Amino acid sequence: MDAFAGGGSIPFEAARYGFNVLASDLNPVAVVTMKAAMEYPLKFGPDLQQDIDKWVKWVGDEAEKRLAEFFPSLPGETVQNYLWAHTVVCPQCQSVVPLSPNWWLYKRPEKQNLHKWCAVKPIPNPENKRVDFEVVRGKKGKGIAIQTAEGEYDPETTATISRGVGKCPNCGSVIENDLIYEQGRADVMGHQLYAVAYRRGEGNLEFRLPQSIDDDGFDKAKTSFNKHLHYWSFRFCQMFQFLTDINLLKEALFCSQV
Image 1 (cartoon, rainbow, N blue to C red):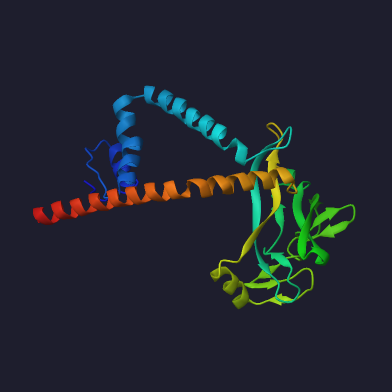
Image 2: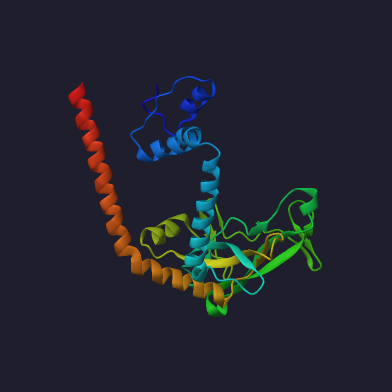
């Protein structure tokens, strides 16, 4: 018997040895997880797997259909990930500086992957007070550098933050840790999309710079989020109150039994 079984690892091992198991938890999510992993497979048998596969596919297809407009892809590609960096404003030149300890995109150490290392390289743009990027692709060079036709590039040498201290690529000024914290606490720290990961069919992961289609997808997602935020907050409060009532009821029952 396990009254606080959590995800059910102990009851699961006990059931494997053929013991009669009683398990529960105060967290309703943990209870549902245990039922799905232990009780239902024994109760419904192999047919349960078919139903699970069916509904997993339905949920995936429905989510893809509803979210497609927020994750647009160029012809022939399917977007997998967006890579963002927090930004702060340089106190000296007022440039918007994306912060990252390195700019690696792909650096797998296996022999078959050493020829497709990839990273972005920050390009100073002081005229427009921003930092642009270019994608660097090549094979492994000396150490952890990327070997290209133009030479070697180490994505860690262009880091814009290290040990909490930033550096502006446009003017070379140091951005102190206190200033970064200050902008974060004041909620004026921004963000910049600097790379997009995608696949062509069943091919390997590839990377490109962001384009207007990616910005449009983000703007649509932000608009939709703000539109539904009030409703989601209301539903969350309802659920929180429901769980609070459940816990209070359990405490009352427990205390009365004691």
